[in-house]
Image (spheres, rainbow, N blue to C red):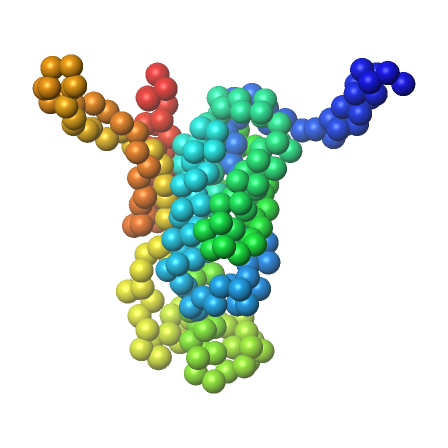
Length: 258
Protein backbone atom coordinates (compact mmCIF):
# COMPACT_ATOMS: atom_id res chain seq x y z
CA UNK A 1 0.00 0.00 0.00
CA UNK A 2 1.30 3.43 -0.93
CA UNK A 3 2.18 5.76 1.93
CA UNK A 4 -0.43 8.33 0.89
CA UNK A 5 -3.23 5.73 1.01
CA UNK A 6 -2.01 4.31 4.31
CA UNK A 7 -1.70 7.80 5.77
CA UNK A 8 -5.27 8.70 4.80
CA UNK A 9 -6.58 5.44 6.23
CA UNK A 10 -4.82 5.82 9.56
CA UNK A 11 -5.87 9.46 9.96
CA UNK A 12 -9.51 8.46 9.50
CA UNK A 13 -9.10 6.01 12.37
CA UNK A 14 -7.58 8.75 14.54
CA UNK A 15 -10.49 11.10 13.99
CA UNK A 16 -13.31 8.55 14.15
CA UNK A 17 -14.56 9.69 17.58
CA UNK A 18 -13.51 13.33 17.44
CA UNK A 19 -15.81 15.83 19.12
CA UNK A 20 -15.81 19.59 18.66
CA UNK A 21 -17.14 22.41 20.82
CA UNK A 22 -19.79 24.14 18.72
CA UNK A 23 -19.05 27.69 17.49
CA UNK A 24 -19.90 30.63 19.77
CA UNK A 25 -20.14 28.45 22.86
CA UNK A 26 -17.94 29.21 25.82
CA UNK A 27 -15.56 26.46 26.88
CA UNK A 28 -14.92 25.55 30.49
CA UNK A 29 -12.06 23.21 31.21
CA UNK A 30 -11.58 21.59 34.62
CA UNK A 31 -8.32 19.93 35.61
CA UNK A 32 -7.98 17.72 38.68
CA UNK A 33 -4.97 16.18 40.36
CA UNK A 34 -4.79 12.43 39.75
CA UNK A 35 -3.76 10.54 42.90
CA UNK A 36 -2.87 13.78 44.67
CA UNK A 37 -3.90 12.38 48.06
CA UNK A 38 -1.07 9.86 47.82
CA UNK A 39 1.27 12.47 46.32
CA UNK A 40 0.78 14.94 49.16
CA UNK A 41 1.15 12.25 51.83
CA UNK A 42 4.15 10.30 50.55
CA UNK A 43 6.13 12.44 48.12
CA UNK A 44 5.65 16.03 49.23
CA UNK A 45 5.07 15.72 53.01
CA UNK A 46 2.68 18.68 53.14
CA UNK A 47 0.89 20.24 56.08
CA UNK A 48 -2.75 19.33 56.67
CA UNK A 49 -5.38 20.38 55.85
CA UNK A 50 -3.78 23.16 53.78
CA UNK A 51 -0.19 23.81 52.82
CA UNK A 52 0.86 27.18 51.44
CA UNK A 53 3.50 25.56 49.21
CA UNK A 54 0.88 23.38 47.50
CA UNK A 55 -1.44 26.37 47.12
CA UNK A 56 1.33 28.43 45.54
CA UNK A 57 2.11 25.53 43.16
CA UNK A 58 -1.53 25.38 42.03
CA UNK A 59 -1.61 29.15 41.52
CA UNK A 60 1.64 29.06 39.55
CA UNK A 61 0.29 26.20 37.40
CA UNK A 62 -2.89 28.18 36.75
CA UNK A 63 -0.85 31.22 35.74
CA UNK A 64 1.11 29.02 33.34
CA UNK A 65 -2.14 27.78 31.74
CA UNK A 66 -3.23 31.37 31.14
CA UNK A 67 -0.30 31.56 28.71
CA UNK A 68 -0.73 28.17 27.04
CA UNK A 69 -2.28 29.29 23.74
CA UNK A 70 -5.95 29.66 24.69
CA UNK A 71 -7.84 32.89 25.32
CA UNK A 72 -8.73 32.34 28.98
CA UNK A 73 -11.14 34.94 30.34
CA UNK A 74 -11.10 33.71 33.93
CA UNK A 75 -9.33 31.00 35.89
CA UNK A 76 -10.24 29.58 39.29
CA UNK A 77 -8.30 27.21 41.51
CA UNK A 78 -9.13 25.53 44.79
CA UNK A 79 -7.58 22.50 46.46
CA UNK A 80 -6.13 20.32 43.65
CA UNK A 81 -8.36 21.55 40.83
CA UNK A 82 -8.24 24.30 38.21
CA UNK A 83 -11.13 25.65 36.11
CA UNK A 84 -10.57 27.76 33.00
CA UNK A 85 -13.20 29.82 31.17
CA UNK A 86 -12.19 30.06 27.51
CA UNK A 87 -13.61 32.73 25.21
CA UNK A 88 -16.48 31.62 22.99
CA UNK A 89 -14.64 32.83 19.88
CA UNK A 90 -11.40 31.00 20.67
CA UNK A 91 -10.57 28.67 17.81
CA UNK A 92 -7.43 26.97 19.16
CA UNK A 93 -7.05 23.45 17.67
CA UNK A 94 -10.32 24.07 15.80
CA UNK A 95 -12.09 23.56 19.17
CA UNK A 96 -11.32 19.84 19.03
CA UNK A 97 -12.06 18.35 22.47
CA UNK A 98 -9.29 15.72 22.51
CA UNK A 99 -6.70 18.35 21.64
CA UNK A 100 -7.96 20.79 24.29
CA UNK A 101 -7.90 18.05 26.94
CA UNK A 102 -4.54 16.56 26.02
CA UNK A 103 -2.71 19.88 25.59
CA UNK A 104 -3.95 21.44 28.84
CA UNK A 105 -3.50 18.23 30.86
CA UNK A 106 0.03 17.93 29.48
CA UNK A 107 0.89 21.57 30.18
CA UNK A 108 -0.46 21.42 33.74
CA UNK A 109 1.12 18.05 34.58
CA UNK A 110 4.52 19.04 33.23
CA UNK A 111 4.57 22.40 34.99
CA UNK A 112 3.39 21.03 38.35
CA UNK A 113 5.89 18.16 38.17
CA UNK A 114 8.76 20.57 37.51
CA UNK A 115 7.57 22.89 40.28
CA UNK A 116 7.90 20.19 42.95
CA UNK A 117 10.42 18.03 41.10
CA UNK A 118 8.04 15.13 41.64
CA UNK A 119 6.02 13.24 39.02
CA UNK A 120 2.48 14.63 39.10
CA UNK A 121 -0.50 14.14 36.82
CA UNK A 122 -3.61 16.26 36.28
CA UNK A 123 -6.51 15.01 34.19
CA UNK A 124 -8.73 17.27 32.12
CA UNK A 125 -12.33 17.50 30.91
CA UNK A 126 -13.96 19.99 28.54
CA UNK A 127 -17.44 21.41 29.05
CA UNK A 128 -19.47 23.22 26.41
CA UNK A 129 -21.29 26.24 27.89
CA UNK A 130 -23.91 27.99 25.73
CA UNK A 131 -24.66 31.05 27.88
CA UNK A 132 -23.42 33.27 30.67
CA UNK A 133 -25.97 31.98 33.18
CA UNK A 134 -24.38 28.53 33.04
CA UNK A 135 -20.94 30.07 33.49
CA UNK A 136 -22.10 31.71 36.72
CA UNK A 137 -23.77 28.51 37.91
CA UNK A 138 -20.61 26.52 37.22
CA UNK A 139 -18.19 28.76 39.13
CA UNK A 140 -20.60 29.22 42.05
CA UNK A 141 -20.86 25.42 42.18
CA UNK A 142 -17.08 25.02 42.32
CA UNK A 143 -16.77 27.71 44.98
CA UNK A 144 -19.43 26.09 47.16
CA UNK A 145 -17.61 22.78 46.71
CA UNK A 146 -14.46 24.51 47.93
CA UNK A 147 -16.24 25.82 51.01
CA UNK A 148 -17.78 22.46 51.93
CA UNK A 149 -14.58 20.49 51.39
CA UNK A 150 -12.53 23.03 53.31
CA UNK A 151 -14.85 22.90 56.32
CA UNK A 152 -14.89 19.09 56.30
CA UNK A 153 -11.10 18.93 55.93
CA UNK A 154 -10.57 21.20 58.92
CA UNK A 155 -12.94 19.08 61.02
CA UNK A 156 -11.30 15.83 59.92
CA UNK A 157 -7.74 16.94 60.63
CA UNK A 158 -8.70 18.59 63.89
CA UNK A 159 -10.11 15.25 65.08
CA UNK A 160 -7.09 13.33 63.75
CA UNK A 161 -4.69 15.69 65.51
CA UNK A 162 -6.59 15.11 68.73
CA UNK A 163 -6.35 11.34 68.72
CA UNK A 164 -9.09 10.04 66.41
CA UNK A 165 -8.25 7.31 63.92
CA UNK A 166 -8.98 7.66 60.18
CA UNK A 167 -12.24 5.73 60.53
CA UNK A 168 -13.37 7.53 63.67
CA UNK A 169 -12.75 10.99 62.23
CA UNK A 170 -14.37 10.12 58.90
CA UNK A 171 -17.55 8.76 60.50
CA UNK A 172 -17.90 11.74 62.82
CA UNK A 173 -17.50 14.32 60.07
CA UNK A 174 -19.88 12.53 57.67
CA UNK A 175 -22.73 12.79 60.18
CA UNK A 176 -22.35 16.52 60.89
CA UNK A 177 -24.33 19.37 59.34
CA UNK A 178 -22.54 22.53 58.22
CA UNK A 179 -23.44 24.35 61.43
CA UNK A 180 -22.37 21.37 63.55
CA UNK A 181 -18.99 21.32 61.80
CA UNK A 182 -18.47 24.97 62.65
CA UNK A 183 -19.40 24.23 66.25
CA UNK A 184 -16.97 21.30 66.39
CA UNK A 185 -14.09 23.53 65.28
CA UNK A 186 -15.12 26.21 67.77
CA UNK A 187 -14.90 23.66 70.57
CA UNK A 188 -11.24 23.17 69.63
CA UNK A 189 -10.56 26.90 69.54
CA UNK A 190 -10.87 27.33 65.76
CA UNK A 191 -13.14 30.03 64.34
CA UNK A 192 -13.72 28.97 60.74
CA UNK A 193 -14.76 32.50 59.78
CA UNK A 194 -11.27 33.76 60.62
CA UNK A 195 -9.38 31.32 58.41
CA UNK A 196 -7.71 32.59 55.18
CA UNK A 197 -10.25 33.15 52.42
CA UNK A 198 -8.22 31.26 49.82
CA UNK A 199 -8.65 28.10 51.88
CA UNK A 200 -12.44 28.49 51.91
CA UNK A 201 -13.29 30.15 48.62
CA UNK A 202 -10.38 29.43 46.31
CA UNK A 203 -8.75 32.17 44.22
CA UNK A 204 -9.45 33.76 40.84
CA UNK A 205 -7.03 34.87 38.13
CA UNK A 206 -7.65 36.97 35.05
CA UNK A 207 -5.99 39.59 32.88
CA UNK A 208 -6.38 43.26 33.74
CA UNK A 209 -5.27 46.33 31.81
CA UNK A 210 -2.67 48.12 33.90
CA UNK A 211 -1.31 51.57 33.11
CA UNK A 212 2.48 51.65 33.02
CA UNK A 213 5.05 54.37 32.48
CA UNK A 214 8.44 54.28 30.82
CA UNK A 215 11.00 56.33 28.92
CA UNK A 216 10.80 56.74 25.16
CA UNK A 217 14.38 56.00 23.98
CA UNK A 218 14.03 58.23 20.91
CA UNK A 219 13.33 61.48 22.81
CA UNK A 220 14.10 60.44 26.41
CA UNK A 221 10.62 61.54 27.54
CA UNK A 222 8.30 59.71 29.89
CA UNK A 223 5.35 57.95 28.24
CA UNK A 224 2.42 55.94 29.58
CA UNK A 225 1.01 52.77 28.04
CA UNK A 226 -1.43 49.97 28.81
CA UNK A 227 -0.20 46.43 29.47
CA UNK A 228 -2.17 43.30 30.26
CA UNK A 229 -1.11 41.61 33.49
CA UNK A 230 -2.43 38.61 35.39
CA UNK A 231 -4.36 39.68 38.48
CA UNK A 232 -4.62 37.25 41.39
CA UNK A 233 -7.66 37.71 43.63
CA UNK A 234 -7.25 36.05 47.03
CA UNK A 235 -10.46 37.57 48.40
CA UNK A 236 -13.23 36.42 46.11
CA UNK A 237 -16.81 37.44 46.91
CA UNK A 238 -19.46 34.77 47.38
CA UNK A 239 -23.00 33.95 46.21
CA UNK A 240 -24.75 36.78 44.28
CA UNK A 241 -21.77 39.09 44.67
CA UNK A 242 -19.59 36.45 43.02
CA UNK A 243 -22.02 36.21 40.10
CA UNK A 244 -21.88 39.97 39.61
CA UNK A 245 -18.10 39.84 39.85
CA UNK A 246 -17.87 37.18 37.13
CA UNK A 247 -20.29 39.01 34.84
CA UNK A 248 -18.12 42.10 35.03
CA UNK A 249 -15.03 40.11 34.04
CA UNK A 250 -16.87 38.69 31.01
CA UNK A 251 -18.20 42.15 30.10
CA UNK A 252 -14.75 43.72 30.36
CA UNK A 253 -13.25 41.03 28.15
CA UNK A 254 -15.93 41.69 25.50
CA UNK A 255 -15.18 45.40 25.59
CA UNK A 256 -11.46 44.73 25.17
CA UNK A 257 -12.26 42.61 22.09
CA UNK A 258 -14.39 45.34 20.64
